[in-house]
Length: 97
Image 1 (cartoon, rainbow, N blue to C red):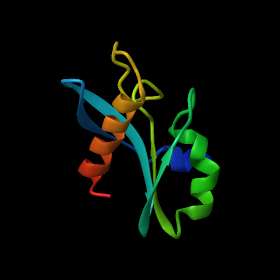
Image 2: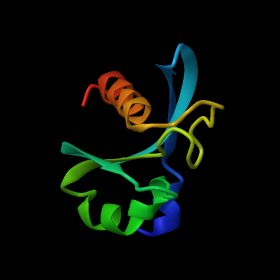
Image 3: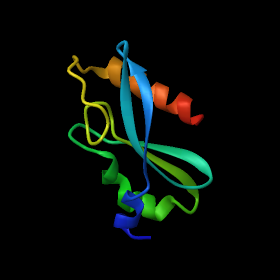
């Protein structure tokens, strides 16, 4: 599977962080046990495409744009670990993974 084809499988959902609704952009590719991939500072969801190419036949690979990065919402808030954790927690709960 080529990286460009994988990148075309993007989804979004709404989350509620810091009393406001935010959009979470993510890739959801493959089937099997879920494997959530989180990028580092200045990263985005497509940084995992090569790994997803290797694993999508064995795992449901989910790659998330963290809050303030990529195609997820970029609210004017103070970003810290607690905010990002709350964002990821809501995504995990909504996707039931």
